[in-house]
Amino acid sequence: MKLKLDIDPDIVAMMTAEVAAGEKAVTAAMRQAGTGLKTAWRAQITGAGLGQRLANSIRLASFPKTGESLDAATLVWSKAPVIIGAHDTGPLIRSKNGFWLAIPTPAAGKSLRGGRITPGEWERRTSLRLRFIFRRSGPSLLVAEGRLNTKGRAVASRSKTGRGLTTVPIFLLVPQVKLPKRLDLARDAERAASAVQGLIVANWVEEKIG
Image (cartoon, rainbow, N blue to C red; front, side):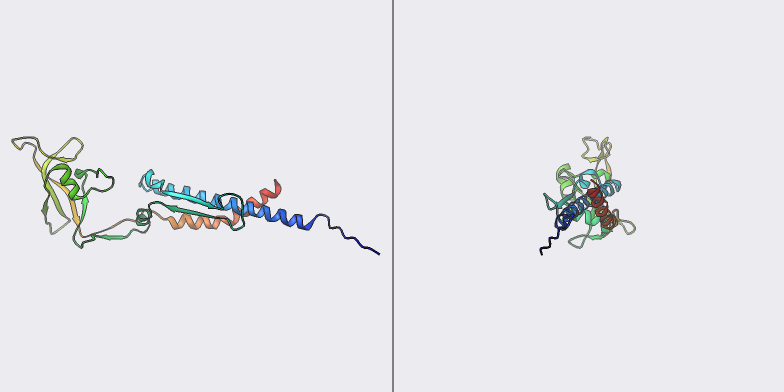
């Protein structure tokens, strides 16, 4: 006597298909979560008034780069971690040499190299000398004798009589400054992580229905 056992449907084929569906679901979920987090972080940065250029420093990488895997992962990071981290934590900033932090006023203008202008760069650019004024109440000052142009920037006076010449505050001098916390990246990261399970289930069901 011979017995023949046929299993219909094929269990092995079913399991193989289920694993493949799981790989697709997990991979799609991780990519969706990563994209959502990148978008949320960029929106936070622009919403805080930190500019599109800094927002664009947020990047995304998904693994595996091709194909699907149950171990799929996504990485969201910034190409400007020091700047982003400072706005995310709101640190207390002190001068490196233990003296003063020079905070430029609007009359100082901006650095030609981008970012905050320094007293040394300002003097080289304007050919004016800065003078220190100590104040007991409020920040001390670095001032210059010049005039304000139409853009509100301090420049050298071209008048031989001294007409329009005035003492212009160029930098405020403070021993330290507390940077305000303007971002909450952990909040969006936690939301993205919490959404992963639901995304996996949604993609798995969609794959099976499809």
